[in-house]
Length: 287
Image (cartoon, rainbow, N blue to C red; front, side):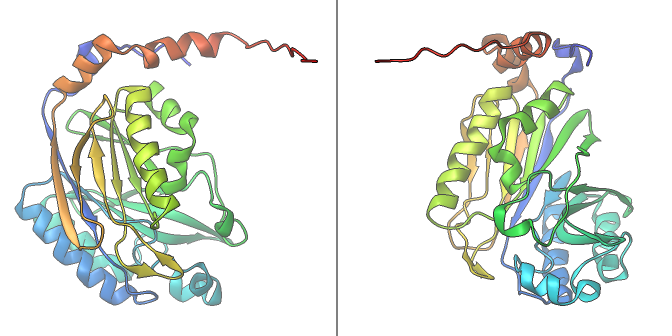
């Protein structure tokens, strides 16, 4: 990998407005979840957001057993007619959307984010890289990482558990990512703690913005914790949603903060030196 050029010239030159659709899914009811998503895309578009993200597996709810019961009905394919309404909304309001849903390709089913651009075209799919323990029997994964280029910003894709692996965001940051966006399901209790640690840590680790979009209410067996949020490149929270309310979170990201953070914090720049060297290990045995 070539060293990343960390000069301000590679930073965005204009602000990016992002929207996080913190919402609840009706388990197994794709049609109604699409209708709800349309309303949130419309609202975000009227607020002139550039991109909106929905929670993990939003279109079906986080219910793997429903997906397994009928793969045809509860997974989506590329350009699926059931989300034509969402493609139309993106075109009408000039906004990009990241839609969390199970996706089927051949015999494999993935936990995915479908990416729709502001012209209403499906331009890509990101498949979750790191599967949670309860997903491994049903879902597949691959090693393909996705960066969206929008208004000079490089937006790295993540889904929930991905953020628990520092090397995931580091790889994206080393390849130019300015914003790490995670479509997620975090539950109350330990899930909430994970979300409060992982996303600010990934921001500071890499001097990038991070954003997390979560469910509210109950989906499947999970009592979710809300608190979708955005963190700046020093790991400080910019905006935080409530625990229980459906709401549209909007944040405007200033690229000057990237430059300011990297002038003081050099972890990302220094990480390239680590890649060129091999760690050595020795063991010291006590009495």
